[in-house]
Length: 267
Image (cartoon, one colour):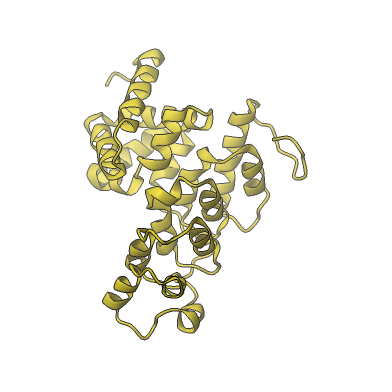
């Protein structure tokens, strides 16, 4: 791609790209479509498209918000691009100060790095069962069993649990908000299409200092102004996540450089 491709052409590309992606009903197919379509682009164009996609998502464009929240899988995209291309895209985004794009590919450690609370698992979880038995339990229709599975530390068990039709939003929020927690478990929640689209679940993930920053940052464009303000003033959250929230706040308020007031009543 010519680096001087007109902005109007790029905006039209992003708009059509997002509309096409959101017309795909199956979320897994949608994710693979988005990754495959981006891989076809050259590295400069990928940086530009991701930048405009994130910007438009923060400005409220419904199709861009949909892609950002349900179809832009940075982990899948990184695997398909390979380390060399990811490095070039990161360099291009960093040169142009596209920080949201850079953060999609950064492997930043959570503010609090922990494997999860084994005490909770041994006290309330199904620790006497094998991994296979715990996966099977995650498909149970018994509420008491599901509550116990929610304390599991293995992401494969949680992945099965998140697909269980008996699981409720309150259940997922409880797991997403639990501290300490396993970053891998929290990432599973962030990758679950049904639950990552729920605003309360997004907030629980972003506000949890054990959530991998890459996951939390990917959810920032979908938060409301009040939620962004809360993130900005939460000292427990990773500084990169708070910085991303600050930039999103400025874009949504339309005043670059504006510093929110902690107890402000505006929304």
